[in-house]
View 1: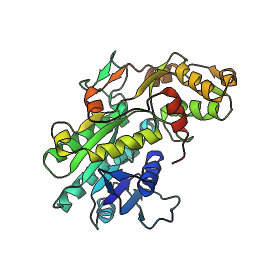
View 2: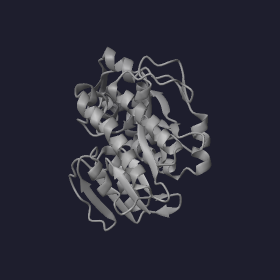
View 3: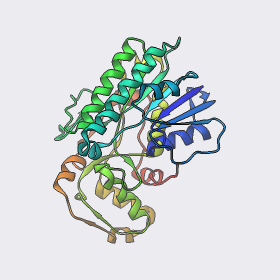
View 4: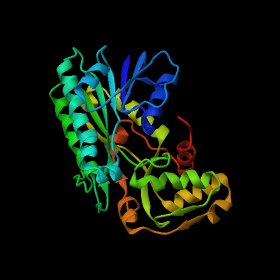
Length: 316
């Protein structure tokens, strides 16, 4: 089994690559070769099954090189997140949209006898704000950031190329993943900072109110769901190629309380609140999320808030 991870040096990509090399399998098959493609490769792990390719992920020549020896599974995880893509529209457009189209075209033109399975990392950013009272699998996306618009177009492209048999594509709408490292350019980074700083015994000023509701998923949990998406069979994607993932819908105060249960009541004295209206509206006003079709297909959230906090801090 040959796997290509585009954006393999990112927060989620590194964890996926580590899982594939350690103990990950897809549909009962173990990866024999994993190609990591990214704009820049910081470090290279000494693993015989790992192959690294550094280059422009929107360049068809680079993408063609990445699949030159054949590929069975492709995980397209690369993106310029919401805040950064708002500040640099052209960069966001190139990475979030043009790279996706270039990948689909390269896979189409390769004309493999068995089209590879493609997992496209979409985002809950496709919904925009304000959100309706409930988000479910029939909610109409209305993105209010360029990032969300670009991801939504990517979903439509993946579905259309899948319909035509060019690639066996499926998209997953990824929620806020915690705990991300500092300085990623994401407007929602404070959700990760909250868990990381308080769990490490440091003080934290939270930019949203404790009653603010958000959606949470740990990095190990999203890896579970990405691998599950790759393993979906023909019957499961025949009618549906875009999947809304189950999440923990909890308040900021619920997260703080869980950290206090794990690390002691002193946690409660180290957190203060200075609500920012824009961040509150964008990331702490989330309604309940219901996705029974995804749950029936086997997608899962972390289970409990305590387990979320523990898994959020696990190394890749």
